[in-house]
Length: 291
Image (cartoon, rainbow, N blue to C red; front, side):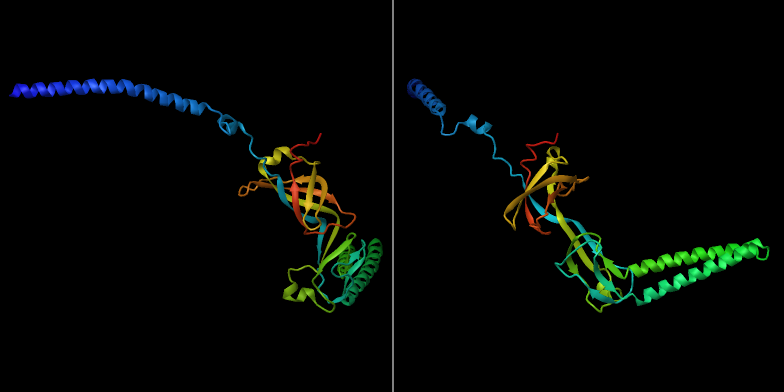
């Protein structure tokens, strides 16, 4: 009985192996056919070839950077004289010429000090001459003569100081320009009030030449040179103005990795005002060089 069962099992295994071999012969060609079809499909030209996508150039990087326009000449005027404001002659927005009086301070006490210094100097000169005569006649000692000469020198220095203080009662324009802001009014004592302790009497500008100040990435320094033309599209006027780069910062900000540059822009027509903003085009800088 055991032999019969063993014979049946062996026959079943033989039939199974025969069936599996026949199935595998039919299955392998199908797998090969499918592989070929996949290769064929992969070989068809796609809508955007893979190689073309890899070598395709990226979009150009924008080279527009924020710019601020400021007057080339901007001055804060104050005085060391502790005196009352008599008259403010120029106020916000007013134009003036070089040497013109902007603010007059009370000069009564300063004039008195100056005249006293002049009188003291005259007295010292007379005394020195008298001592010189007495010394040559052998009446006065040499030390008396030297003391009189020293008194003249001291009197002369006092006159210089008094004259300077008297001049400081007038705030004069150092150049042609316009008034930005006045911090005092007629009758005030600016140097005696805490509010004016750290503030100038008047702020002035000369905006005939404007400075376009731009912070540019440090990696663009290789393309930037003094003398290159920089063009700025001004937001407030919607116009583009240009000027030559005059200064390049000496250090790079390690936090932002930027460096400041400045370009001078002619503004003789007065179309530009300090504080205007715009976008500086650095694309031209990377294409044009300075011989």
